[in-house]
Length: 278
Ligand SMILES: NC(=O)c1ccc[n+]([C@@H]2O[C@H](COP(=O)([O-])OP(=O)(O)OC[C@H]3O[C@@H](n4cnc5c(N)ncnc54)[C@H](OP(=O)(O)O)[C@@H]3O)[C@@H](O)[C@H]2O)c1
Image (tube, rainbow, N blue to C red; front, side, top):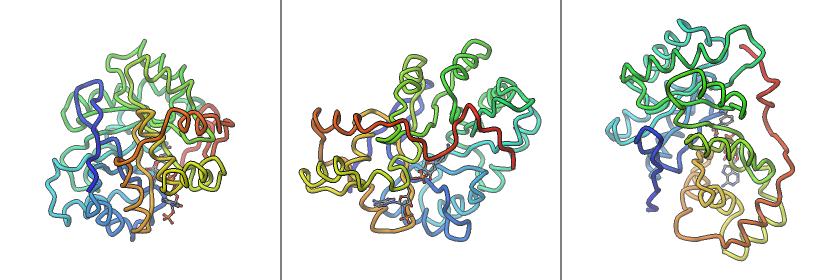
């Protein structure tokens, strides 16, 4: 079985660089999919209140026989709960649904820059949660450079991570650079662009050279860039395939060719414009 490297966050907490994402896994299938991932060896699960499947993640962990401390679990504050008291209550609700007494990482899912609650207020609620010890780390998701700079200037705790869309068609290197400058780890969501990048001839060519699959090559590219990834799959063979990333290496030339595929193409919303509340 592969050994997954860990990354030290800015508060000293270790996070496995490879995890398993459960976005778009139906609630009724989440326990099974998560159990499969845990059996394969994943020890990091990325869920969110918005995905409606936190319960299945908690059930899988309990059924797996693993200790809670052996698995790094992230969840996220849903849109619509950005006001201070709502954020605290939503965190409590996530813990209750998961059946946990703490989360390893809790994120603001979207900055929602156009709503009437300032995300600085939301972040101050997460700071309180962190200080209570019930979230071992706190961070943000989909924050742009200007959002990060405001948090750093106006609040006390620097986010441990910023989870943003990154894949070969959206390298997002400007935001990644600001993350690095501020000591924030980058988590790359939709790391294979939900499959969009897997037929690219550059990717398939490099995969052939290494006798690997296109998904393994793209995930390995993320790993060598130093980002944290958690591909999603409900297909056991793919869950296994996506875990086998640590016994081969892309050359500097391969890395450059994949990075050059960037065309600033988002598969998800633009965080500057997204203000959707469920
Ligand atoms: N913070 C945010 O706003 C945000 C937004 C989006 C995602 N995320 C997080 O990032 C995680 C991953 O992103 P994602 O789920 O959007 O997309 P993704 O991991 O890039 O791609 C998932 C899709 O690719 C397929 N797939 C997986 N492995 C494959 C392989 N080896 N070969 C071919 N196809 C493969 C899956 O199909 P099957 O499942 O049918 O096998 C699924 O359709 C999410 O689960 C979530 O945790 C966060």
